Image (tube, rainbow, N blue to C red; front, side):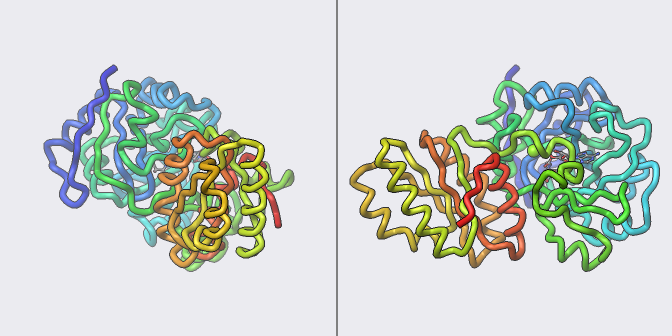
Length: 357
Ligand code: TXA
Ligand code: MG
């Protein structure tokens, strides 16, 4: 299959281009498109065969349900059998935007979309290209992030192609995405409602509208049942072995420096993924190691600007991994703002290798 790439102005999408993409969706094709969070890989959510192609293209396990994207909140009743008032209130407050709501599903949503669950995840994205596409397609669009299974989510069309070239029909290239990590997922099939994935909206923003929403507790055995399905499988995993360092910034920096020295001495090629401020603090150590030529550093945003850290994280992770390092030592920003979601993605990429210092 040849993948077509079409550039589209994110501020003013050309209706002729969008109509072509909408037709492709209606015909059962796979179309990658930008949203304000990350690029999605779309298929007509009412077409079970098209949905099956998403799983095939991504190499995604069928047990991991998809998010259904809608043009506007008025389409909720096409997909959900019941909309509790609190869910509607949250949707009215934050849609179009980086919010996904889980509700009981209507029978016309194929089981392949929801991995056999009686519930469906729904989201109204705000990106102009996504909105225009959903509007013109006229059908709900199932769209996971447009990456191969277990890879970081794509924040540019180039990331989509790196993973899915010749596996999908079309990529709409609307430039880099704004938020850079995925939507916040809130499950309204349980009482009280649960935030199942931190993302582009903070818990504080959500609780300002629906105070009853609770966060999933810190990860542990007891919380497994609380996680969204598919969240225990490999996610965001680079080829290199990534370790996340947790703790006070200055302690973490000292420990990263020490472990970098130890690893480099064994001949390992080490990459450091950290906010700019941490890399500045590490600079003297790194200068001493530079003669070895074994350490790659990759900044993502800064501790003072969690939104920029979120925007740059996945591209930074991909870039560092592409240098061929064998080990990545990562530090997170603090939990303020999007920091919670940033740390969540790094913790998943670490697959349990979390060093508390
Ligand atoms: O920002 C986003 O949400 C992006 C863009 C493309 O919209 N999409 C995205 O999709 O991140 P994906 O497939 O990478 O993550 C969707 C996750 C699943 O892994 C699953 O954990 C959860 O949503 N999910 C979907 N349906 C669910 C359901 N019925 N119950 C619980 N969790 C569900
Ligand atoms: Mg994903």
